[in-house]
Image 1: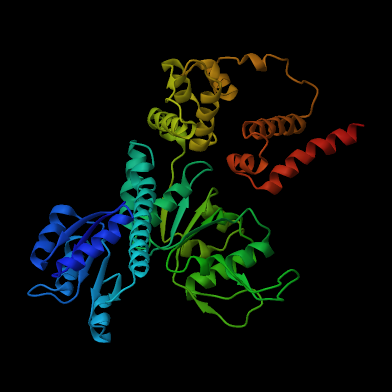
Image 2 (image 1 turned 45 degrees about the vertical axis):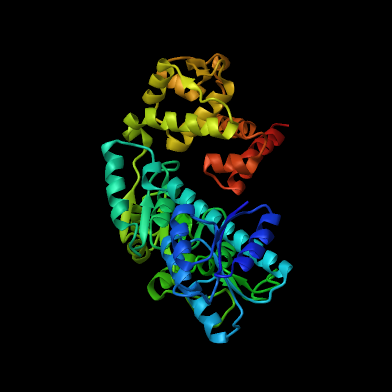
Length: 460
């Protein structure tokens, strides 16, 4: 229940309001003068203030002003026998939560008190959530103390609060989206939407509608108007992941959006202005793609106003112990168990592996090891087979003879399929999560699994 400060120069009125509040279980602090009330604002820090408007020397508006200065989040309810529109408007302009006239009904006051406290609770919860999000995506949450990561921190700290378009480049699994979120949540747009889309996850026609929206009847299935992600991100940030996969026609449309800061929905004849910061990411060298004609050069330079190059994990192996400790703590929080420890020999093997899947692969490896280990200690045997093979340790499950007789393509497809199936098992059969872990689209996952059935059918 709440602590409520009640102020009125009529002791009988203070007693009545105190009784109403105490009936609901609230703690009350009573005052018969404005001066005493201001002192109690400091000493008691109430969650709600109820004050009479007209009092000698220091009135309700004076108390309201002091409360806004000392306790800006605390709601103030003003009560008066003089129901003038002018005084009500002034009170609301100064930040009063509500304005009640005497004589009031008990249930009316109780309802107003409850609404004020509920509103304060929501404001506090939203503030805490915003702070948690900002903490989660602060620059320090991008784990690493290597010189390459320090350079990344310095760069993104400088550009976070600008509106410059940024192209984040790096291999899959290096943390490009984490950087994009850090840029947004440390910018002046942090309280506005952050909208992310993987451009490789949808076919061209659906991606265009998803990005820019469409008008009713513009194509089969367009049964109503739909706003696109650019409009959803208004005043905030849109993150275009895997922008390198965007089809040429969409590249042209995106270029126009970046140049004109207007979007046009599919099937529409008019444009809509937008105020959106654009962040993009690519796991391929876009400059090379421009040279062979697979990506528009003018679009590349529009996106890469400020390029951020994420280093692969193999180039910052000194960060692996920090990352391992972070993922062990994360696993502990997710499973509500004590954090696992790791054998120094196992950590040495992790540091010697090249991590083609980068930080994402390391996180998956730690999650796997936490599930398999005994006694809360991750040992060498709990590490993924590929990391063990790299170190010269032969995993027991891999002692079967090599399938000599297959073509090289057949062997590669078979290993790829087995890896996909193991990843699906790791995700308890959830293919969508497995595709995200593998950093491939659902269509690619199904296609690669379909190759197995096709090959089996051909042999029959």
